[in-house]
Image (cartoon, rainbow, N blue to C red; front, side, top):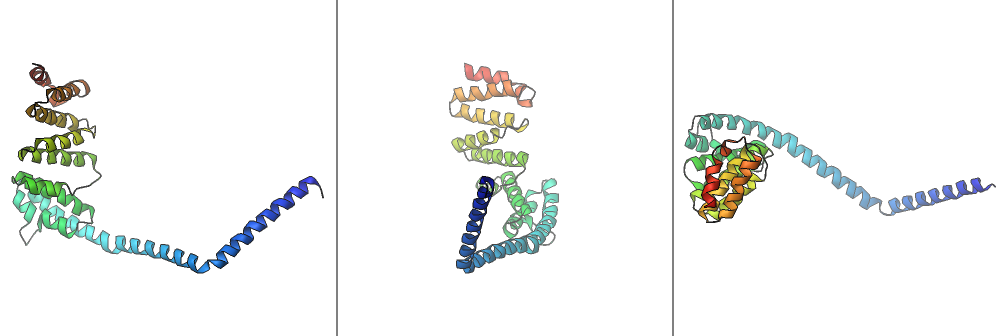
Length: 225
């Protein structure tokens, strides 16, 4: 037998040895393997069933309810949008409770928070706004900023500035300068003028075309006195 043939023979023996060991392992633990595979299949089926037969139909129902409440919201009827009228709509608050697992239910929580803010109920607004965890970057950033506004109204300025800075960190061309300015104004109220100046300068340098940049020089001058 040549050297080349010996190598091939050795390789075949190794493969056969591995296969034999694998077969022995499968035979020994066949029951546990079948249980494991069966468990995985069952979990997958449960997840698919939950999504297709429960979550998706409820998403459709939630969307229908959302449309009714959003119509009221669009006309500044915030109490009606929030609570519904018991006949035509159930309101954002109930949608959030009834359909909380759905995307529309999560969005309803944010809308409920906005309604509470508009109605001057800032603690309830924070509670509902904090429930929102959507993927829309613009809307999510606005929600964080609005939580900051709620804390300003409650005179909890240190908490407010944290949420404004969180909104700034999203690096949105439109929203970041808005919340940079709001955070700067809070820093001024806290007598932290260096931080306020830094925010104003960031508006000037990074967002020169923003509305907030048009009069930012006077704010810079004010904190530099």
